[in-house]
Length: 593
Ligand SMILES: Cc1cc2nc3c(=O)[nH]c(=O)nc-3n(C[C@H](O)[C@H](O)[C@H](O)COP(=O)(O)OP(=O)(O)OC[C@H]3O[C@@H](n4cnc5c(N)ncnc54)[C@H](O)[C@@H]3O)c2cc1C
Image (cartoon, rainbow, N blue to C red; front, side):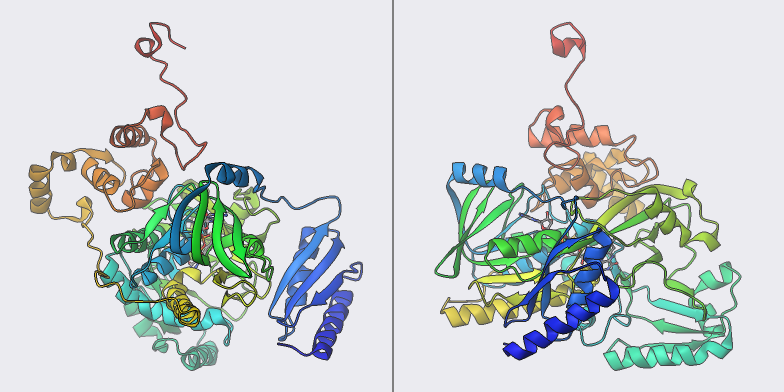
């Protein structure tokens, strides 16, 4: 808690910083004892609003910023929860849980799995039709070493710990983790002191084993330099850099959590948080009222709105859009690790608050270009603009990569707050409510540590509340994973086909995905309900033709297995139906429509 004169001093400092940078702005400022600074008024553009938010967050005494600046004549688009509230009230009381997790991205799934170690009734809900439907499906999949994050931040601490825990996660949960390492080379030996300094800094932060390599060693370890005709003079080497397919990690966590008793509910939008005497009692959702004693808010770009629903308005999320281009696999990655050449004049392109922004690869060896970093007022703005794409592709301009190599591009929104740090805490305002907000990059890398931290916060709160916590005697951390058919030996493939002929029918030719694998996904603990959800589990549709040939087969399989009409099958949930109707004459009483 902060003394009143301290608050006045901080407000005065923020006012003068604003005056200096944005002289036309005259906002109202207020600050509570907890250090939450509220900034109100009108400004001329979204860029101004974001700059003001960042300036307001600068003083160390500011815990976080609620930015209520509106752009003159251009109100920011807001989600209308009204229709969902009406649906929920109509449905009445439908469910109850000890803990309700809102959002099933990497944060929600990791926490769900962590809490499944206890004998608890945990329910995880999401407004979309599957896990990993927000930022978690739209990122680079980098498990960052943690060397380039501001020391002393929660992000830095949880990134380091999360990176370390990924090895255990991958072993227990059976997803692919490639510790490819990160290499930054110099071609001018006079720059070596820069590398030494960077390695020393990383070491001081606790990054795993940073090293400076001489040129020969760098070439041996990274054949890409030879392929590129680059003669490294020395290089920094961070061996803990890892690569994953982020949605597969979330699916693995959710499946393991489900096996240990956690329930998942999709197409369920939380529209209000119910409280009594300052304590959480439930949530009003589009599916009805869910009674609960604890809520863990992992709602990504909407986390600030969920917190406000709980009566604790303590941060604002300003979405930062990132566009990534995926290249065809025949464009082999130029580097095997994540590597590049550092020069003295190298200027970091793009937004300085965002990580990433280069060329990297996926564990399946597709090159990813990007992401860009653009502040946008609309949380639903997932447009990939020509400017974003040009920026993403410019990162590979020295490698002969062109637009013809792109097989797909996509955009995700980073859920950034104005402190540009993770905001994880038990609400001091609403008992039983835990915020997991501001989870921008490195949220994927930090996820195991985020889950660990939230488990600690929850256990402490439960102990204080006298809520009994016992270990789940049936908990198993292991999720068995079948190896992909295309990665099996001929003998194993034949064996499988004999046992289950569906493995002999290839559905996706680009990625060699069989019907057997799609059926196995459809019978898994968190079964996919849409074409994109099948894609995230099996890679059907992720190849060069992007589903041009296999999408109709996947629709058929979904319809058959779910027992629904093919026209009811969606690309990614509500309102994204692929087919309109069966217009064959025999289906229309002899008349084609
Ligand atoms: C372009 C880009 C590249 C990135 N690259 C990396 C990287 O390489 N490495 C890294 O570590 N991090 C990276 N990140 C960051 C990383 O993706 C995020 O930190 C992480 O995915 C956040 O996960 P989350 O679960 O907190 O949020 P999300 O994945 O956004 O999940 C939030 C969920 O909440 C649900 N939800 C929202 N509102 C409601 C509601 N009212 N009711 C019910 N459900 C709701 C949403 O549907 C969503 O599924 C990147 C991000 C972007 C955008």
